[in-house]
Image (cartoon, rainbow, N blue to C red; front, side, top):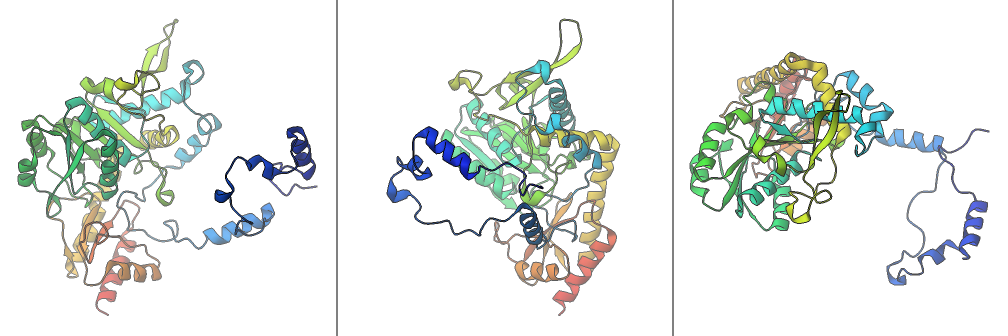
Length: 450
């Protein structure tokens, strides 16, 4: 007989025997220590249980209502992007030795996992121009918050200045984390689509631990890291850059432009959008800050026979060193997603990643020029990577609803976080075809012209 379930549920006889062993008459007796006033009365308001076959069918019906990038061209970015992922990525990360692996506490039986992380760290260093990278963080925003915390503890100063062109969610997390370490977060105002450097300079003082910018920033524009480094250096503050790793295939590495800490999200390289997560953050520093890096670092060594091997070299967290010396309470890393990024980068190669980044620049530029020819106002004054702002005469929510009716997913409404009403942040990755871009512009023009 075919089982109804993928697992073996307890039978009524199983439950009866367990209750007898515990010398109780019902499951309710297990909860006697929970006060009655906080217990749920009655049954949960959920549907009756289904067999596996009916449940799978029901879930497929529900999931088919989603509108996603495999069906519709997507022009929404704002931190999560539709990029090409080589098929080999999923093949490798689905192998059981990686898929089920946890923390490699025993290096002698974890060489494959440790080597994969070591390769990830190495490639992150190459992209960012930094000396050392850790084995990954949860995501880009939390990685950025860890960088700010490290800066505060290293400089023993009480203020961090972050540009408003940094992702709104990153700034929100930064504000949350700052409460625990009792430092203040000030936002640097914008000059159009980039940081106002004159006002940033005026904002800096002897209490400033770090200056934080995004590269490219939330609007897709390229900040002048050299000038911002000079401003931070004048006040002895650290310079933290949150960078898109794909863009770094073509842009000058932040490490070569003076960054002290570089963080970011690896999602553009090998990690699917998955309706918003999980992601994988990276964290890279200069060698002098190596022992303060949160999380863990995998190092290369040799065994007794002189063979190449890998170990967890540095772990500056409270579980391994004195609590008051720990730079973070970060307790894990995104090993599987870090592996996905490493496999993606290795598969594409240096030239492949450059070509991919170049396509993002060219296609975004093509779409911006098409919109300008139709009379739309593109707001970016600085050069941009794969995102830009366009001003439209109708509310963005209304426009996106109409685009969805035409089987397209529109851009990000900047009225939500920046009060830039009727301004849309459009993302154009290498996945978008000329036909899709032209169709988007045509639909938008027809919608505006009635």
